[in-house]
Figure 1 (cartoon, rainbow, N blue to C red):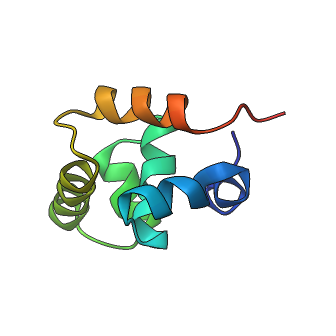
Figure 2: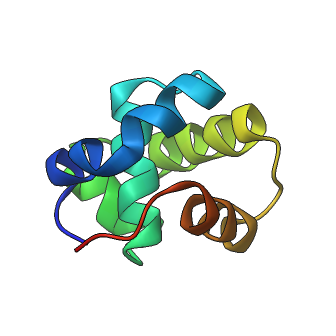
Length: 83
């Protein structure tokens, strides 16, 4: 799937516009879909795990899902296949 920068080029802008996500939140979504943990996301974003967890909670609320699995399912449905 590529890194978060590549993800924005593969339809993530639609997801950002549809749900009002910031570019940073879109990057976090990309990392979630790629299977990164809260600790991995925190390290990648140079923040504490608590801050990363709060950011993920805000993303889930914006998108209207309660769990990571629902977010991943939605992203898979919304984004076009990557070739």
